[in-house]
Image (cartoon, rainbow, N blue to C red):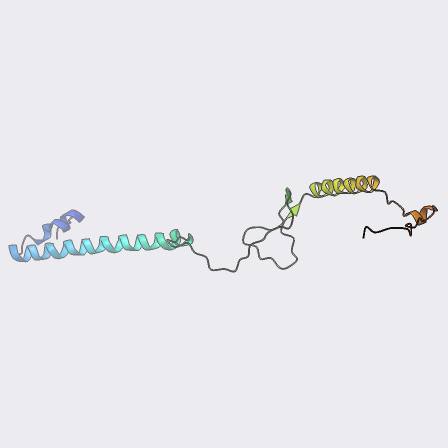
Length: 147
């Protein structure tokens, strides 16, 4: 038996003793075996690549997330000093979400105190006459009406 290379087997060099019709049938079977083997190898390689590489990444065509969320609105404005929570972190009632710089609020409080002090200084309570020690005058009883 002669040794044939892989292409010799594929070309059917060992089938020279068969009639032409049988030879073509055997060649066709060998070509289908090779084609099927290539398809199986490609499918196994693609499946292994998906399992080891691609399956670790999430992808979607419809990017909707079904979670409970709430809008948070502050009662005051100011510059943020720190944000002690991170994305997608669970928080509970009373957790600090944002630390606002208190300097703006302190400045506004000082301005309001100054305005209040100025108003109090301008409008000293005017004591009524009976507390000042002066006489209380009465209206004259001889008021005439024009009738």
